[in-house]
Length: 107
Image 1 (cartoon, rainbow, N blue to C red):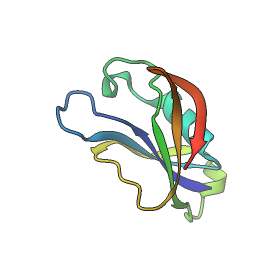
Image 2: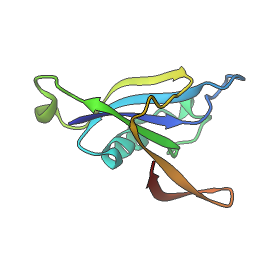
Image 3: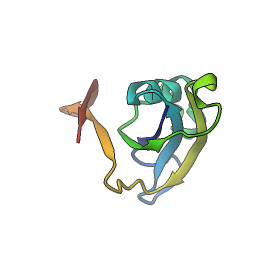
Image 4: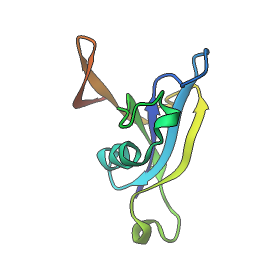
């Protein structure tokens, strides 16, 4: 299992440049996105029931003893801070005009 930051640009109710972030243990980045999509509270995303993440960072390996047995899970979040990529592998959601798509591109 790997560790991912699933990032939503902006944070509901805050006027600064902070982002809404979830730390997720998952086998791949799409499983991490799905875990947040299914479990995120709409109150943390301006009432949007199924928010669409903007960026995912793969930040490491989940080396906890029960990572494989437990499966995909949100470890922490949402937390509000400015997301920053420290050289990690990452994926950005593709945008078509002003609409988010279900396609991702690796950076």
